[in-house]
Amino acid sequence: MTLNEYLADKPLYYSEIDYSRMPRAYDSIKKYIKLPKIIQIIGTNGKGSTGRFLANMLLQKGLSVGHYTSPHISRFNERIWLNGKDADDSILEKMHEKLQKLLSEEFLKTLSYFEYTTFLAILIFSENCDYVVFEAGLGGEFDATSVFPKVLSVITPIGYDHSSFLGDTIEEIAATKLNSITSIALLSSQYEEIVYKVAKSIAQKKDCKLYMIKDLLTNKDEMEIKKLIKENNLPLFQEINLQSALAASKILGLDIDLQKIDLTTLQGRCQKIAKNITIDVGHNIMAAQAIVKHYKNKKIVLVYNSFADKEYKQILTILFPIIKRVEVLHVENQRGMSKKEIVDICRQMNIEVNSFNSIDDNEEYLVFGSFVVVEKFMKDYFEK
Image (cartoon, rainbow, N blue to C red; front, side, top):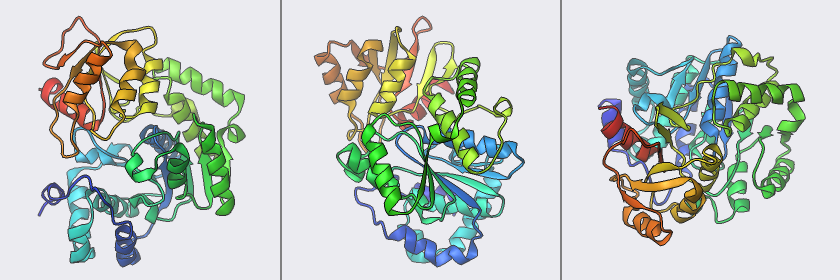
């Protein structure tokens, strides 16, 4: 059975998660894996971009580097990046075959999509890398990527998201994510003051050395980052992510020349794919706030849909100042999309709303709401 065939039978989402399964599975195969140095990225927003910036910094120093991120937009290969390129099909299939032999029938049957692909990634990286940047999935403490010992934890901005799994308050969500830290951690700039308090408390309990960005970056570093963001026409929210990556590199003892860094970010991070089309995989309140700042004093056509468990009313309220009209993209998904509810909310807010059908070259569009919204748009309307 090929990797794609095997993963096709794995559900992407669970209403309940067995948090003991991943540690038990890892214990059963860890003697066969030689771990590289692992850096884990946790947080709510900016994990993918921060991780890719850091991976490129490590690569600049002549190190062999892996970066594991999720989800993907076009191809599964996007999740496993090795020395500047997405993993090719041959190495994915080779390590899939190896993993099928290592894992017991119990784990082959019960591991989730994300858990299995996390093991697939570490097998690939263990044979090829000095350093690995692992992006946590939706959590921290119980995340699949947290089973591996790490040399550094990087915490990106934390906000409301996945409250059914992580907690109902920022304090609870922050605690769930931050409980994954171990010996050394870097806390990036936060929007919520309570996160600093939670981080310091957990770090103290775990005897973890906790760094703040301001402890590591000079005024010269910050000015150079601002200049690079402007020169490369990157969204302003990438400033925090680049700061976090540079600070992390300093903790690792690396002397980085920012002028030589590949600043190409992951797909779908406020990415302009045509003169009048931008795609963004954001799906939460923090992402909406960042988008409003990016489009300040402009009006766009919002191509949108949302999972039923997301705060789409709050998100639309935040986006209201930049919305010319909303065009709802139809998406079939097992988590449930909320077309009718979005239409009703838009009408309550006096926002013009209809179904998305095609692109008008005279309008400016933002495709936003989740990875599946962007994936659907790219496959059905842009990549034809």
